[in-house]
Image (cartoon, rainbow, N blue to C red):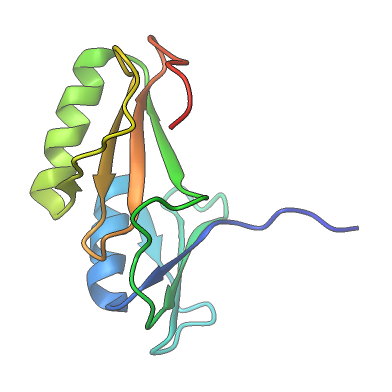
Length: 128
């Protein structure tokens, strides 16, 4: 039976990406399948795999068709998490597709991969 695994992000620098995403999402880098081209990140509570990092030579897409949505419960939590992620190395993207009064903020990880921080108390604001 086929089942969904976990998201994989293409990155140029595996150690930098592992440092960012483990800090951002309280994950743990494992030695499972670890190599210069791959790193598995697990949930810190031991409940399983959360994210894969794969070395990629291609640049990040400006408007990726698939991206991560990270959820928070309140606007205050969204603001705090966006600031924390920026301190960890994320960048705010000048996103020209924001709807009026969006429930999400678009950021990019240190490799330029876009992701969203979504305030569930205001969702859904529309396509993002």
